[in-house]
Structures are given as structure tokens and as C-alpha cells.
Image 1 (cartoon, one colour):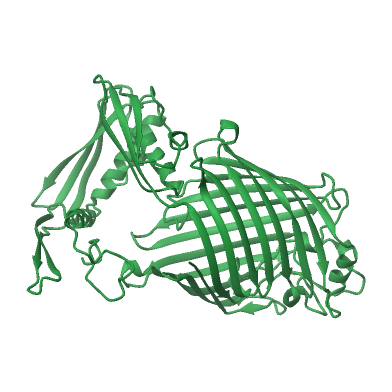
Image 2 (cartoon, one colour):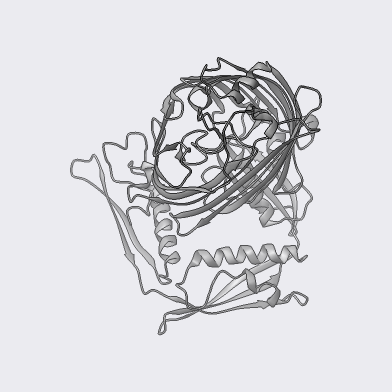
Length: 570
């Protein structure tokens, strides 16, 4: 139960938090957390009898005691839906029920069922419904029967939206995230979605939306109170990874420029294998419309000596624009102009690499788009929902190369319990030249390292049979199955473990790109690996350790059993 409440016992290592400080308001919150925990786990009669804070004799600390009455564990009894709206048939909503007869009582499932029924009724054209669960408790059989009563609610309209607490952020930046406008019919789902969108901006520590009666019974006033947080960042980073060695980074960023929600960033990074400078600017509502327009400029020098015996320099920029097609479907378009140059080719490198280097610096001019459908509960560390995307790039609007590149992928997250998350992901891509143009070495896909644990960067796929240099591939498909869970340590440590299995393949090179005499290794066979990992959101930065073992591989693939990354920003 100590892990359920927000208050923590004092320890020497909790100097980064105030959770071990006595706070009467937090004790009240702890009572609610205990109640919610027990009601979620079947204890329908649970009560907190008292919560007492006793000052120690030394008057330097408190002893906190919660006295509870657990009661008995209950199961769900009969579950029914009763509609008091004439044209709304209960059977059309039965598949939305999360409560099942015979399973352990769970108050949270009742709340989620009400939300699902409300959304489903709205999709059927009934925007104003009031769903109330009528519980019938049988103390002899320890069951709780539930009837979800659907009543027609009176229409209420938004009279006014008041915004307070925004000292720096302009009102319009907040209002444009609202799914409700003044004069609209009030909708609880849209109110919650508005709060979710405001929180996702990352401009506020806290977002509270409350309702008060308006000037008449069918009017309501929405009060929005926000607490701003710092959005400017000056970061100095240092770290280490097995793929790039020692890493240094300097960046300056403002995510809410002049309170207008604009994002500007200038960054530089240096490692043993990469030097990079990039600049980015985003206007989230270009010309007052819901279009996120931006520009990116970059200069990247990448060392591929270990993988294929050459260095690559890439310099260029992109113009992009993203907009919502629907509430959860978004499209981003872009135009990119860049120059790629291969240099410092090793004398023993593959003939494919040498011939590509002889072509000199090549200019790529491309347009592309990405369609993304996002139903995750949150973008960072999601625990529930799914994410789908499909994108294409078309090169050949000028420049020296022409191709079509298509990629698609999906991620699915399922909360097995409140702390254990199952995830399944897959991704595939295909690139082909246009008008008999071949796909160059630096435009092909690479698989390995971060996107395929158990193998080195560019560890699988086509290779020169003599030099064993990685040549990339035109077709790839990768997937991953992972189960993430805590290690039983206190939650504030931020330490989680995972077991995973990665699988995939990379193959395909245009025959014209392979010089005569090169023994090409190019198998379509599936590779697979399995392993365990530990991640720690330490006070000094994120740390990740993965141990993976290839299960299925080709003889020429390059494996990497241990992968470590550490970084910090201060």
C-alpha cells in the first residue's frame, strides 16, 4: 500500500523530490488513491476510517497512519443496459460493455464503460445523453449487479470560455486547441479532448477546466485555468552509446516563442562517428489556419568506415506543412533539397562503394507526405492505443536522382495491468528507381542497431561477398514484440525492464549497381533475435541497456549482443 499513496517515507536519495515532505492536501489525495485502488480490485465496501499525522517527539517529522476497512471481495453480477430514449436500442451498445458477469468488481471499468457508451450514443446521433449506473449489491453472494440507465439529458450550450493563468501565452494559442467554441452545444468528450490537447502542447504544468452555471439554465461557462512552465531550453549534453561512442551536444530551443506557440531550435552534436548541425522552425498555425508550417536546415557528416568503408556528407534543407484531416488523422507534406557526397573511401572497400564515390556529389530534390492515425493515450511512453502511418517520397523534381520510396508501419499498445504494457510494432519499406534510374548506395535502407537489437548498425542485409561491406537494401520489413514491466522498485526511481523479440529482413539491390566480379550476398531470409532490456530515467539523463541474442541469422550478418546508451542534459 505504500506504493499506492503519493506520500513517501523520507530517504536520503529523495533529495530530488518533495514527496517525503508532510502535506495535508497530499494526505487527502492519498485517501482517494487508496479508495480508487481498492475499488479497482474488487473491494466494493472499502472505507478509509481515518488518516492521522502524529508529530514525533523531536518535532522534526510526522508519523502518518491510515486506518482502513477493506471489506469483502465482490464479483460482477448481472450486467444490463436500459434505454429511456425511445429510438436508442440497448443491443446496439452491448458490445461497448467492459464489465463482465463473474469477473472481479472494478469501479474503473464502470467509469470507462460509461465513457464508451456516451461516445457510442454520440456516434449514433444522440449527443445529449446522461448515463447512470444503478448498482445492486448482494452481500450474501458478494456480487454487484449493474444496470446502465441511458437518459436523455437537457441541451446545454457554452455561453463563454474564460482563460486565466496565462501570463505569457496568448489567449488565441489556448483557444485554438479547444474542440468547443462559445455558442456550441456542450459535450463532455470534447471538453476532455480539449484538455488533452492543451496538455500535449507542453507549455503548462497544469490545466484545469471547470464548469459553472451560465446566465440561464441551458447555458454553462467554462473556466480554463493554466499554470505556465518554462519553455526555453539551453542544453549541454554528454553521453555514450555503443553505436556512436562518446557523444556531445549543444542546443538552444524555445517551444513557445513570444507566447505564440512557435518552435525554434538550433543544435549541434559531435560523436566519434557523426558531426551534425541543424536548425528548425515551426509555425503551428500558419496564416491563422490549422496548418503547422516549418523549415529545417541540416549539415551531417557520418562515418560509415566500420560498416562499408566510406564517409558521407549530407547538407540541405526541407520545407514542411502538416494539417489535421480529422481529429486523429494527420497529414504532413514536405519538400527536401539536399546534396550527398561519399568520400574517404577505404582502399579495400567494395567496388560498389568506389563506383558510387566516383559519381561525385549528387543532388536530391524530392517531395513527400506522411499520413498518421494516432489513437495512443499519449505520445511519450504510451500504455494504450495504436499508431498507424504511411508515407511516400518522390525524388526527381530536378536533381541527379529519381526514385519512389514508400514506408508503412503500425504500433499497438495494450495495458496487461496498470504497470505491465504489451506492445507490438511492425514497419516495412520499398524504394525503386524511376525511368530506369538505379537506387544509389546512400538512398537504400539500413537495418540493425536501434531498430533491430541483437545486430550491429547495418548488421543485416546485402553485402559484398569479398569485403563484407554493407550495401543496404531496397526492401525491408521489421517487427518487434515487447513486454515492459517494473522491477518492483519504488516508482519514483523510473526503472523498468522489458523482454522482447525483434524480427525482420532486408534485401534487394538493382543489378546495374553491382559491378562485374562482385560476389553479392543478398538473402531474403528472415532474421530474429530475443533479449532483455533495462531503462532508467535517472536524474542525470536516460540510460538504456539491452542484451540481445540473434536466434536466426545468416553467416555474414554482424551481431551485437550488448547495447548501451547514456546521456544527460543540464
